[in-house]
Image 1 (cartoon, helix red, strand yellow):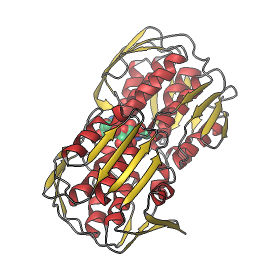
Image 2 (image 1 turned 180 degrees about the vertical axis):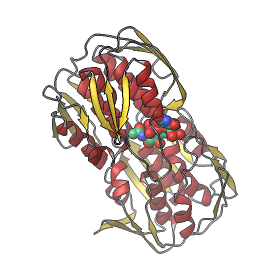
Image 3 (image 1 turned 90 degrees about the horizontal axis):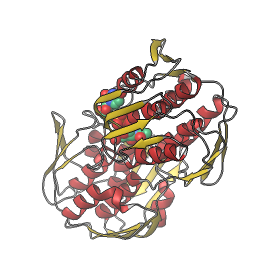
Image 4 (image 1 turned 45 degrees about the vertical axis):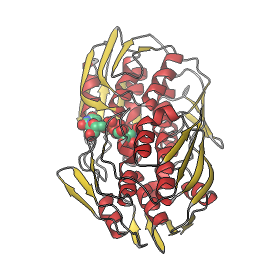
Length: 418
Ligand code: UD1
């Protein structure tokens, strides 16, 4: 199994081109099922998660070809509305195919995604939303069996904002008869891009980027040849935090600063110098006078939960103590034990982490527990005295496109070993 060897205490200088967003490409790939022709998706990150979604679409009969940084999906022969456990279990986002399959075929059999490293992450909102559209849903042996003679638009109120449920229900509602209103819809840029693609295919979605989406059902969709995936704001945020922590000066290219206002705002509050360009960001830090700031995760446009672990590491190096409250996933804290192994001093009480600042980190053997936790460990290792070995890097390969190459290019001493 691959692992990373990292020598710490190097500042980072140079530039990095940010990849396309993982959380955008997966729903776009699912939406390609609704197109009537081959869709080429450009600026695709090379990740095991994009491959998993591609393999799932192939398994259902679609033609999928990968190029250097694009994927072309032709759904014309896709005729098996069945997503097996062996693929869905490795990636929760595979569940995104339920909406487009039921909309296109009137039936679908999709495995439940199962648990994950931090909590159960249920799919009840997806299922309740589909039922509201008149879809008949039953659960059999770990599978969702969905059937619908005719979907009828309805008012759907999610108990709380969910990215996945919004995307999934939306991809069914676009082909329902009549109007659908989704309340507590996700406003994340990745969901905005999904809405824009569906509209280009002929859907009628309004309220994009707000928490209420209105969908006027249409009879068929199609006609789109290509789309470029938006830049990955989580990957970009990870690099901003890395440079803030190690010190240095780095230009991020291919970014969308307006998707990152909460992150940029908090970094500035912590004394990190950020200059925004049209599609670039320059971050400068001496790694020494980082100010402690409390943080709470929130849905977009709030501070993203996917940068919580990385922020926690940064606050361990800040000049005072701070707190983090996780509002999206109450138990997304598996990284605390591993960060503490490297010299952090973080305590968790009732969903709120208290982080002692001014910590000096020392390299150690640590283990990745999920995609973003691994990113926090890498940044910690870059700041630690001596060498750190990070095992189970398959987690990071799910969400970061060649992270070790990008970091090595700006001066990090990081190598992948087998
Ligand atoms: C997506 C992102 C993930 C990010 C998360 C929150 C993708 C592929 N993944 O995950 O990186 O961390 O948004 O920004 O885009 N919930 C339920 N029932 C449901 C659905 C969700 O209770 O049916 C709860 C979840 O447990 C969680 C909250 O709603 O507490 C938000 O989860 P959700 O937005 O659905 O996350 P994902 O779409 O899985």
